[in-house]
Image 1: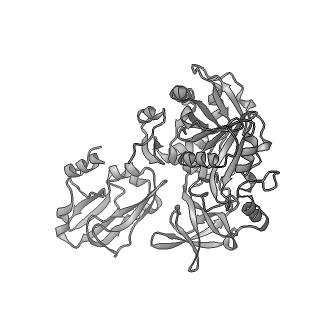
Image 2 (image 1 turned 135 degrees about the vertical axis):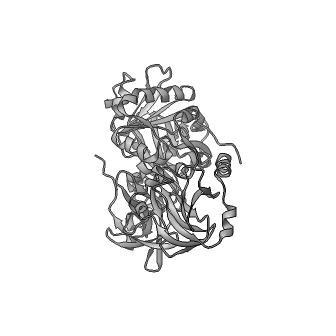
Image 3 (image 1 turned 30 degrees about the vertical axis):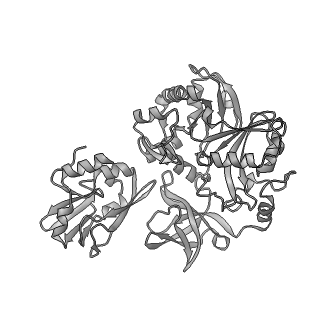
Length: 127
Length: 370
């Protein structure tokens, strides 16, 4: 599975898509594949502030719970409500239908810590 | 860290697309194609499991029955050759050493099948309580001699019957046959109608050398009937839905079999005295202060092992197992809680990470055997 080149990535297996001043966030194909069948997604609410490297929600597979770590700090402006009833979208469409939140980033400097597709590829190959 | 142990089936896992994990020091498949698919396959057709990590301990000699009666909670004298029995070994205080199956192979010869992670501990426990001379009693850890496979599900018998002339319908629940011949397998196989999924099915014990051949033979025989290899992930969800206990979760050194409701395998009135009897008998007669109950989430969330259970601000117990049950499609769990709150319909709060979520006590077993 090749990684979308137009996205940025975190070492915690989130992807980040820049959209005129805002960013859309989800988890990578690699992450959902490692987790297996996703049965529950817990996300913050619109208006919540999230902080880079801190948990902002969780995904649960049949077997385990994994925290979602914020790749950037900012204010949540949109949440993908569809994941509440259809958590399996995370397995089926991690980069498209299963986006998780949209935030207004509050610290531009944090983008420097994110990885390119090539750099993230290297991270997943180490695992 | 020491190297992970591998069963003789290990080389097959990769070909089948398995993801493996460290399970008590063993490198075992957690899933092949996916936990939900494997779970459903086992409930609707059949699944094949490599459970060679399980421990086997052979107890032989003229004093073997006396000895087993002393260390086991069930009445081992009820066994006759070719019958199996589920039992516990307990500590003096009633806490559980392990839960296990005893196969009576013949007079004075018993094979104990124990949890992988407990094999060494159990073996030492048994030796420690052996007060006989070696002419009277021999206890051997024979775990490395066996490959153990399980074929479970409504089509298990039909599939297995295509590769053996032995009439499998003659093997009733908790009975077994030794030295069963399968096409192309040289060694005899012990075939028992037992399992850990809540489905009909068999467990197969065979020589190390023949294990891989038998695995592939069964897989091939079941191909047209929808048989799939199944990993530990689905093994856990299957046993959980059927309310079969898992040592380390429902049972432990600090949990007695009576507290979790497995009184049928504790015979406090059997003739011989046994380790733990005083406490267990007292619990059977007067009840326990804690009880294992089924819970279902009312709020959105999934109960998980170790989550704390509250009534108002008071912690009244903890979750022993929980998941989104694939067959039932519900977020359910088992919890060990104070008996006064154990009535079906009682509302409880489960601490799910930072939040307390509402749940209700429900009836068990979750899944009724068809």
